[in-house]
Structure formats: structure tokens, C-alpha cells
Length: 271
Length: 82
Image: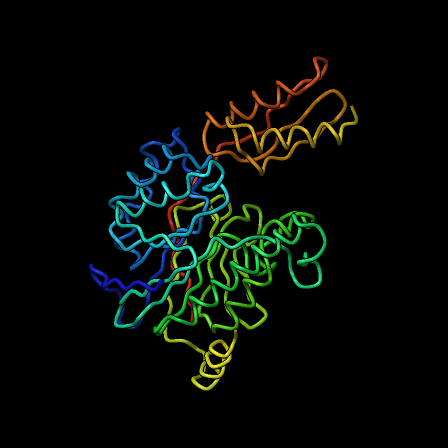
């Protein structure tokens, strides 16, 4: 699904897209009144806020409601994906409904295009999943449980690619909870990399010639990374960045038109 | 019980107990002490984690609280990309 929203508010520098991003808020009922104030300067700093999953601690409906209350008036369009914590109690649909009730766009195999600073900014989002990274990853082979695990990863990566390449936009952003590269996992225990992300997400991001990929999930990882195809990846897990949100200013893409067109054509030709 | 098995049990309990659902706390056992190390978001979560660990430890073992509560700074300047 591709949705379009016209943004409201005061634009920053012409042509510069100001993105705020944070993941892993892990909101619990013990945090009432804490989150809202942390976004008090957001409308001054950014044009859009991206939330990279694990928005609740236990994945309960009550936490979803509290999160929605706290995020109801942040002052900029907000686009979110959910994370594994948000699925824990099988209340993900209710959490999503509560967030959408206060105007937050929640993506799962979906995209949205925003008009910001005269540019069309496309954001495609999936939770993503684990599986590991090229050379040290699982395969769809063996027991039913293993095949199911990797099939879910493949499905979510395929959805991401589909959404990314379907967007008609000037700036292309991938929003996931799980990591698309192991670069941003540096600092985590090597043994848990397969539970933190998948190279298949990175492959989709490269195939769609993204300008930026944002994820969370890896609390002890690293902030900056890059896909094999050169797309900047940023880990915005709040326990890692230790601030309310990170800010990015996306200027005119450094990607030359020919390489962008080639990448886009490749993306369109994929099954 | 071997200390490594006990660490595994405590980590699983911290991840799955509805009082905590915490996955990123480190447990280290040294002698009769179990160190619980890591950052949590609130004092309530710190107390919950300690409670879960205490319930699993044998009577002759002592939990050592090495948890701290997260503090966040103001957002910095934007990183320029593109």
C-alpha cells in the first residue's frame, strides 16, 4: 500500500529534508509523562519523525495507548514500524490502531510519500527479521521451524523491496526495526547477529537505490554503517544513541543520475 | 548447577517474565555472587529485574546490583547526508 500525505508546518532550508529518528523507546506504564516532553523541540528541528520499532516494552495494549497519548502532539508527521517487543503479547494490531488514531503512520510492508521542502520523500517500512549476514546466515533448509524462520525473513525483505521500488519520489528511505547490515551491530555479541538482522534487508535497500536506511533493535551496536551498495545505514536505538532522537539533513543526492536510473531499472526488473 | 547454566536460566527468565521482558542485561557469576549488569529505563524496571534474578538464585548466592538507570541528553546537530 502506498499512501500520500501533504506535510504541514514550517519548512527548513529549501531542498533539505530534516529527518528525526529514534527506535526502541520501550515505553512502559512506568514512563507516563516522560516521553512527550522529550519531543518538545521536534517541530523546530525536523520535518518528519521516524520511529524504528520496539515502541513498547511488553507489547501490551495499555502501553500502546500510553504511547499514543504521549506521541499525540509531537508537531511533525510521524512514521513508524513496530518491533519484536510490540508483537510479544499479540496486540500489534491494537497498538497500531491506537497509534494511527493519533495520526501516526504505521508501516508494515507499506510506504508513504511526504512532500517536504519541495521534495517528495518516500518512506517504506517493515519490521524485518533476523537470519544473519552473508557468509554466516540461515537458509530455508531442514526442519520446518528453520524454513519458517528464514521464509519470514525473505518475505519481509521482498515486501520492503516491493514498497521501495513502487514509490514515486525524490528521496527514498527504508525504515526497519531489524538491521540490514552488520556494520551497525559492531559492539553486539557476534553470536546473536542472526537474531539482530539480515543481509536480505540490505540487498533490498541496495536494489532499490535508497538514500538512507534507518533501524533500531541493536542496543549495543554502532550508530553508523553502510550497505554493500553504499547506502548509509543508521542505528537509532535509543539505548544506543542516548538522546531523544537523532537528526539527519538529507541534501540533494550525491548519486549521479545514471547510476540511480540503473539501480532503479534493476529493482523494477526483479521478480 | 554449573554457573553457565544458571546464567542461561536467568537470562531466559529476564526475557520472558512479564515483569521484565528484558533481553540486554548481562549476568556474570563469580563465586557465590551473581552480578546483574546493564542499563534499564527506570527504577521500577531495575527493581523488577533484581526481583526476578533473586527468585532464581540458590539460597547461598547473593545478587549484586550493577544496574543503572538511563539518562538522555538533548539531541545534537543534524548529520548531513547526501
